[in-house]
Every structure is written in C-alpha cells, then in structure tokens.
Length: 150
Image (cartoon, rainbow, N blue to C red; front, top):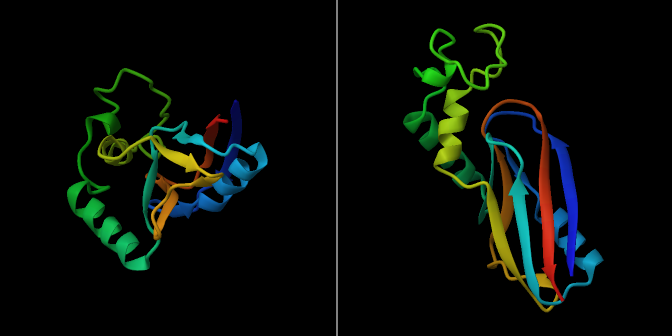
C-alpha cells in the first residue's frame, strides 16, 4: 500500500524549526499501515527536513553555527544579478529571491527523511522529532508525506 498526503504551512522566519512529527504520526494512523516506511520530503530548495531533539539550546546553537558558517550578508554569486543568468526571477536587489545563503545552507542539510514504521508507529528515538527547517524567509511551504507498507 502507498498513501500520500501534503502538509501545507506558512513559515514565520529564517531558521524556524517547525515540528511536524504529530502531523506525520496522525497520517500514519489514518493509513493503518503496521510495518513499512514513511518518507517526509520538502518540495523546496530552501526548506530542510531533519530529525533532531526538540530543545531550545540546540535550535539556538544551530542558528549561531549557520550565521557563522554562512552569513546572510556574505557575497553569493546567486545574488549577483550582474552575473546570474539561470532561473532568474529576481526583479531587483530588494527581491527575496536573493537568497544564496539559504541555498548554501540547504546543500549542507537534507531534503527528506525516511523513518521505519514498526507496529503502526514511527521508530523514532525517545527524543527525536521531525522538523521542517526554514532556511530563507516567511513563505508558503509544502511537505509531502508518503507511507509505504502493509
């Protein structure tokens, strides 16, 4: 059996950690799949899907790390409208598509997570939660959830 759903939401800020674990769990219950896998997939190149512990210190540490490694105000060829020729939808330097820092951050992360389903439940560790992490700015977002199993 293969079942799909979509989680739609609007992010509120850059580096927001949105916990979508309960929404994924509820969908698994609806499917009545006892054993299989659930895929959680971001349809965006500036929204990561990651499993981690839900703890404020980790979120703060991650934000500090990303701001050091990939500063928003750094130079990015993606943002340079004098040389950028592909996928050009930016109208001006004030455009929110000048987000080279967001794309670079995503390249260090992942677009999806696959979690085993055992006895009708995700086999997550005791502290593990599924996060959709906004790497850019406030936007409408879509995450596809696909359950495969029996």
